[in-house]
Image (cartoon, rainbow, N blue to C red):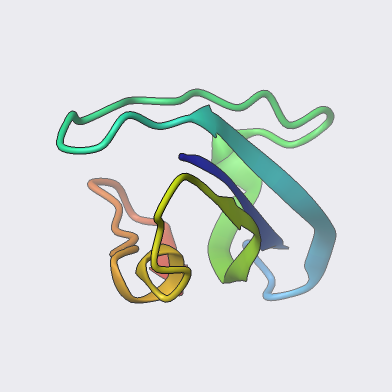
Length: 84
């Protein structure tokens, strides 16, 4: 399975900082994965919200493409709002 999500990053003032793609690469089924993304010129202290617009790529053998949107449950453990 290969998934790429389109995301919008907002600053602490609610302004759009950028629209970007997060490529999660190969994701094996039934196994959790952690991915880290470097976002140039954006620090966690300046990030206020992340909005995932949806999957721009969702491919895999026998994959139900609705899984990429319906099975994606974004969340955060810190004070950054995450929507999707």
